[in-house]
Length: 175
Image (cartoon, rainbow, N blue to C red; front, side, top):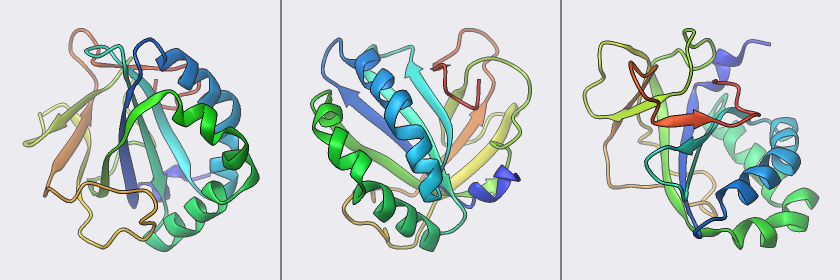
């Protein structure tokens, strides 16, 4: 499957979690939420632990279009799996609204260069960036999940030259 099509609309989601509960959420997320979201039409590019914050979970979810995003989110969040596990997931979170809705300037998440970990840069992309996105100006088609509107933002993804800022979880496609 050509996963580059899922770079048309990207969510960069950064969750602040209750102290000491990140691994609990990651375990639940990887066990219960990856396959149902992908079956609904989302593509989960990456699931990451932030090295700078032990209570932050960062993940990337892509869609083929805004209409596909709406349909996929409706299928997942109004579906049985989310209803069954939402209270357990939400109990680990302090804030899940730090979300950017992005569109590609330069694609590359579907086939990142070799390496480990990921750096996310806001602003001018570094020369090493393999994917660059900017804020999607269209309205949020699934208002039940807020997205930040304080942009515009440019966000780039690169492989770290030294220590990783985002460390991939076991189910992350970007390692």
